Image (tube, rainbow, N blue to C red; front, side, top):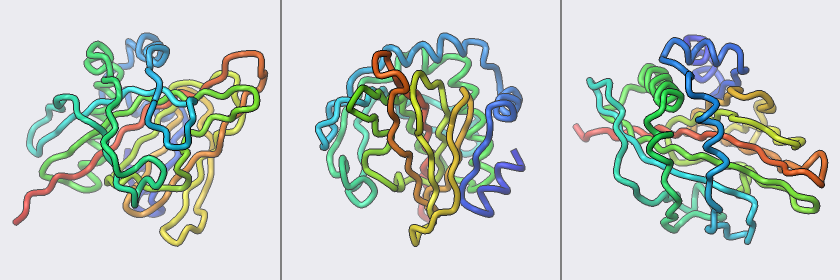
Length: 239
């Protein structure tokens, strides 16, 4: 965890490959239900809010909260996802309702472990009175003649403090390169999430991030990229 913190402090992002990421998560809990957790991506619903008219993205969404001095991370009532146009020029400025993450998934061992690990890491980097946490299950589908767009809004920030993008799986796709840019849009690095549990951590106030389109390797077969995105936004009390 200290290594990730150092990378985030130095450059605003960190790429962690699956093997060390698995070991880090083991220190926060268990991934005993991982197969069932990953299979839940097959039950995502179509994102109908795409201003580009695309039908290549499926997702579910949930809100959680964590308070200072309390280890518990509690699920909040379901509510819409909102981003200002400044952060999302394609789909921002409107409340977007998505299907909720299923209760059995949200309360399962894998997601609990991931949230606990993120809480420990981000608490150490920027202690907050409380955290507002959002989770997004994304499936980006690619078809013959129709690339999937992991970040259709382009290079962007999310309007939060910290972001984790965790690869759940890839099937029959090529590309999907993550690029990181500073606030002057100068590229700082690039990498590709290829194995389940490959992870990207982003200090959202300091860098932009984006992912190149994905295309099917075999156009006759289903093709998709599944990720879990976790965002932490500090809720600080004045004074």
